[in-house]
Figure 1 (cartoon, chains in turn blue, cyan):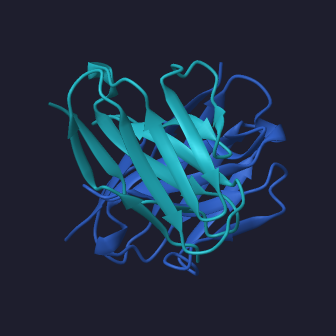
Figure 2 (cartoon, each protein chain N blue to C red; figure 1 turned 60 degrees about the horizontal axis):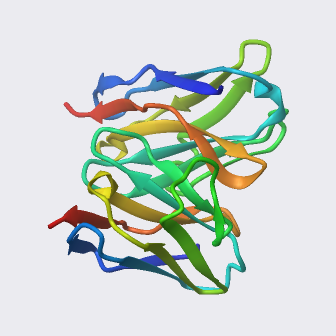
Figure 3 (cartoon, one colour; figure 1 turned 45 degrees about the vertical axis):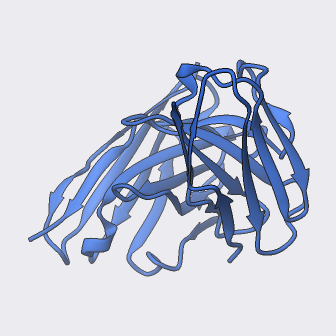
Length: 118
Length: 107
């Protein structure tokens, strides 16, 4: 059974940085692409980033391009989201999610809350 | 970017009634449309993948239809535990996008 556990959220001032982690248990972390999806309070989900199974291919949403970086460490079964120059509009619950045997999000973590506020 | 428009935004429905939620894409996405259920304080859960395929363990009262630009999620007979917000999601092309959600309330 796959379990995803996010950590690293918290309250941060605008302009500062934060690194989120997503630890995966179960099997075959290295065989799957992972995504980060965020959800602002009372809003629908918003796709943030994707990283391929070997980490060589990545992409991020335009709203975070140049500020957020996605990476992974397959030796540690861990996914990361480095967030720099944070803005108030980045306030959201951040979920890591794993694809299934196709381009859909089969497994989701419980989320970690990021609040950008002075 | 492919825009997904869900309707209605809110439905109040009695138990055992049928629920229909629609999702319209701004351009053709084939069958690359998925449905999720989200309850308060929880992460989204996959219900339907590739427009019509029920995900493992999902009750048979949930079904999906459609292709191209118009899609439908149907709950054939609403149960109290189905009170939630439902989202469609397209994976035709990056950036992946989600609908704005349909909240289903039990009358």
